[in-house]
Image (cartoon, rainbow, N blue to C red):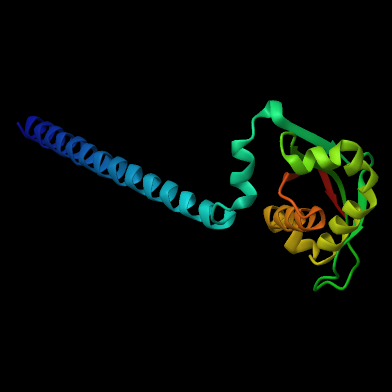
Length: 174
């Protein structure tokens, strides 16, 4: 009789244990799903803040079709000295730059690819000056800001917005 009573007690405790485990798993799964959704929302907001507000830099190129886009690649990679950072060491960026232009713009028709190529040294100078304002740490963290500043300087150089995007096809930090 004691054995049967003990078996019934163990069975009852096992059923209670299974019920409590089920309740706990449902609660943890719901909380985990809500936490994951919250983390995704926060990551989305942080990504917007890192990239900054939509500006002329990003929206200008959205209106231009791929067929109307003309690219100019600076032939050889540029080795550019960066500003000296907190470590006191000299650092360099080796970068391949590509410039996207609106082929239908009247200013582009004025300069053309040949006009851009003939002003390559001026373009390189602007790129070097902008990179020289950044330390290695700043440049690595904020590449979009670097591209935006280079774009603004090139638009000022040509006094036009036919250049709408600057891209780095390859970048090596030293």
